[in-house]
Length: 341
Ligand SMILES: Nc1ncnc2c1ncn2[C@@H]1O[C@H](COP(=O)(O)OP(=O)(O)O)[C@@H](O)[C@H]1O
Ligand SMILES: [Mg+2]
Figure (tube, protein in one colour):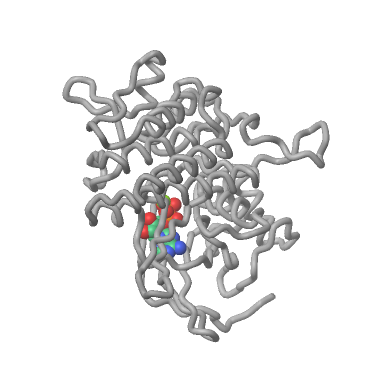
């Protein structure tokens, strides 16, 4: 498909990541609001990141309310525009795949190549900004935990390991309830580091369990990285660890200042003298280290404390998988709910 008629109109820039720009946009025909992430494919790293995001989001057959939905992905080379589809044999798409595999640009470097990801627009900012600009609220915390565990169970069921779960990559959509009260819906986003685990070699029909799919590329953001990720031998249990750091920090409002951006971020850590150290890094040095959870008295009940401890176990096999995690959080939430009424 070659088209010169733009389908979307960009409204304003809403985010600037390490690899691309994100805009709020409207669909010209319907007036619907969408987010458009534009990645310039001028370096193999950018192409790899864009393809990872595309492969993960386009491999999901159904939608989940807490996972960002990819409307479409558009490939633009100079004046040419085409919709990108998984497994396409278009030469433009194949040039990108080759670039990513070889680690060097496989097309004329003078041409400008862009990938445009059209997604749901999240009007509530990211989880960091949302929570840190409000007073702590137990109901919001419980709702966020349930939404996140449900999203993770869905992703792992769909063989996707996210690998970069952190509050900046969790976005908020403030849809309104029938009573007009905005209700925050979390959307797990930014699949640039994700990995889709393909079917097991023995039986191609049988999907491989993400908890048995071993990965070796150490990636993620250090404060949320599990100890085994630092070593470069890990599975989907690394996502459970990252979620443990996020939930612990959310319940106790633990933040640190990012040295590069100077931004305050939600994330728990370990104190060593005056230094703050990522929990995963500290556990790698000393797997027997006891984590002081909770830091503040009364910020969580005994079941929650036990669950976070298990999510942050040094040994990934001792961590619950995403399905068990979801069940246990639902149980904890139900108890809290009965207690409230
Ligand atoms: N669907 C969206 N709706 C609204 N804002 C978004 C959306 N996707 C991304 N953003 C904004 O852009 C930022 C960067 O996007 P992200 O996908 O995390 O890219 P990067 O890989 O560059 O970090 C996000 O932190 C967020 O502020
Ligand atoms: Mg990001």
